[in-house]
Length: 255
Image (cartoon, rainbow, N blue to C red; front, top):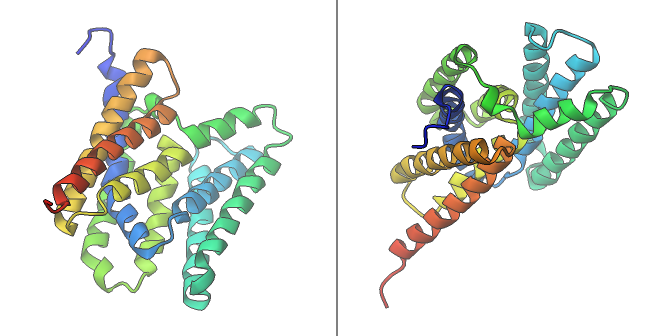
């Protein structure tokens, strides 16, 4: 590896990506199974709206109030979607899309009078993963470990409520690390690439695709001085396309 790559920056960013993948790969597969693909964008955007609301109230950006605002907004949205799934399951996807556009435009309205509004919005959408520090990752790692333990233990008999609650909690944390776009990519792209293989192998393959994509994207963005989140999204799409093609070729019966 070239000497000019600074692993003191890339190391924490890569670990942040692996932490995000630890929860987003299994949740993304569940999203695909349920057929509600845009729930991740909607909940991520609602969590971002909570952060923007905290900015609008001039709360300390590093304070606990911002975290509370973000997770509260995401939990309210998740519980609302859980309720609509029970009541209006046939129109769940359009309702999710409506929630997304309301949250997105709500954030724009809240930032309209803020001179740094466009900068805040860009940070929430694209993320600031390269500025991740080791100290900031410990709370996220503990949170994700708890969510994963509950997910694999309770999910088969939770009736769907755990899915929505876990989704709200992990997406809220992830949005503030990697941004809305990369949250969506981490959930959906590995799940799509591995949709044609058996469930046990599918999880491992999803983790592998995500890890390679994050490493490649972080290094390329560092070398070319490009927005890291955007480069990782494109890297993930390319890696997933290659992996998905290889997987489908292996599973195609010989003629």
